[in-house]
Image (tube, rainbow, N blue to C red; front, side, top):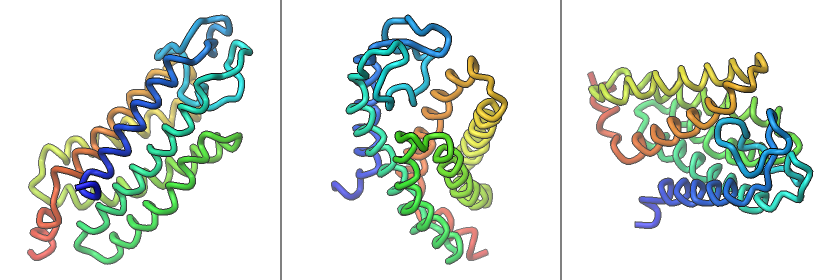
Length: 204
């Protein structure tokens, strides 16, 4: 039972801890250094990882956020490892399993001073993994997941575009949209798809 719901458990713990972090965050954002508390439309999740809050006060949210991102990275890693077991081709199995293991490390390092480079590496690995999964999903009869995968990838790509272009105002909001949409897709694929869904097409 614990193994079956490990992805859900990790992501649920992660969300709870991140929410707690936002509640105890002292304040300050890119648009207003003197703002009080965490503003979901102006603050970035990365603000929660800093030793000092943007307003200069000691960041009491940091420990909650660090443990939260730890469980988040574990949850996503377990997801890719789990999905690798559903793939009908050995190459896809190997790629997803490797991404699952390696990206646990890179995702957690987003919370360190290496944030920018780790975001790039972790996002790239996530997109490669989701691209593999999407290719196989498109060959199945899982029509709802076909749409969900494509939408999730488009949202992710758009958010990365905003990040690369430095459009910080919109990025703060899209970061949360990307986080929520990818997490819902991960949970959906984990608990509502089976190996048989992918094997059916491979046997044709």
